[in-house]
Image (cartoon, rainbow, N blue to C red; front, top):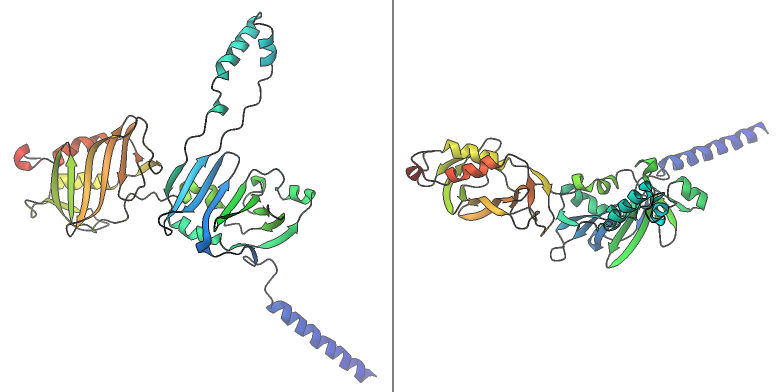
Length: 362
């Protein structure tokens, strides 16, 4: 009897050990990426749109070049402002009282173009950077940490999905899949989303959505050029109808030495210093594709062309607008606004483009 009991206990122990081993080997429930929300290849993804109550962000493929990725930043129409308490009563008395008349006049003056009635500015289309290039394919297939199924109204409110204005829409093969994102009251640590087509709720990983929320600083390509110092051997500088060519030598991180084409063995220190400051120009604000600065097309101040082996590598145009200086290059999709202090560069460009023999020496 004792031997039988011992054998039974031994068998149970073996079964328990096997079960524990199988549980240990199995992937943990809710591991990142183990629930598929949208099952489609990345090449089928046309657009990712994130929006909240005030603005929207879109990552989309160029219609002419599927390998080119763009970022569209836009604002949604503002909601009407609530009526000001007491304004209706003040205007109803015919303006007989001092306070009522002033209130009515103020209300009448504001009624024409209230701030909330102003249409939003046009969206800006800008090049996507490397962060956006890596983020985009993570939406197709879209995976979540785990699925919560269909939740009741109480649970939806608890996770921040009731009344949320935040949306995520994926356009795949011409069809859209829309989701409601949890409000940000709980922060990005718990990014719940609800699939609008069937009400299924999922928990995304915490690192997927913050880049969309901060797209202006994290997804936009802010580079002026895609080549570096040393990747060109000639520079042509133009200003005020005059042009001058220079032979370029050297490479980053050191400044490029520039010597006049007519005397390549005599480096021009003034032009080298001037070009070094031009190369380090940083955009303060990026305008969208085909967007013009205030006041229309700016007037060119100077232009720098970069060549290698006689072929164009890139160029920089700096122009003056009504509110300051702007620039555009072979890489920027449009104009970019420059910081203050470009006036000396524009003034010195005339000296740079004037041969020494004509100017009497720089």
